[in-house]
Amino acid sequence: MPTMSGMFSGTVTTQTAIGLPDDLSHALVMATVSGTHQTDDPNWAGAKLTYYGMGDVWGGNGKQTGYFFNLHMNGDTTFGTFDAIATAVSIGGTQVEGSWQLQTGTGTLVGITGGGTFQARSTSPVTVEMTWEGEYTLPEIEEG
Image (cartoon, rainbow, N blue to C red; front, side, top):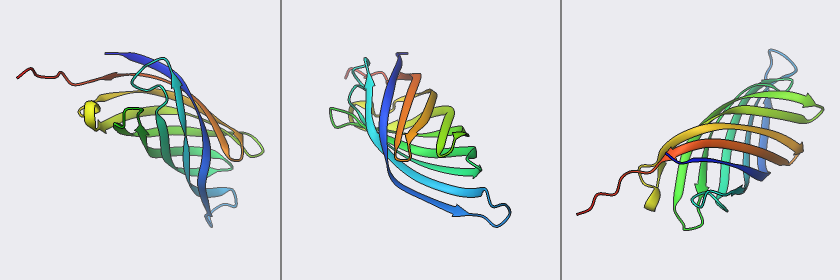
């Protein structure tokens, strides 16, 4: 089972927040972030990541879940989900820590499984920096 780690730099491409009537600091937030992976693992180096996150937050603190896909350099894709805890660290700043799970892939990555952890932080209202690590398994190719 290969292990991997890397970095991701992304840009918030869409973001929507809906204030809830129970508390002035309570909001449901949805965001889309896109960017590129940096890693030594040849299956993930240069892959374009897009993730769609949904948060239930009070003053920037709360739960975040979402869905992601990677477009790998050879044109194959991988898809998965994540769960995390968001913590407000300064005005407009957020730190997110959680886990990710691969669900499926296409092309040479059909049947991929795996997962790991990540730590992300906003570096501006529209930029995100992330470090991640994990492991994955590719299915055995049957000789016919």
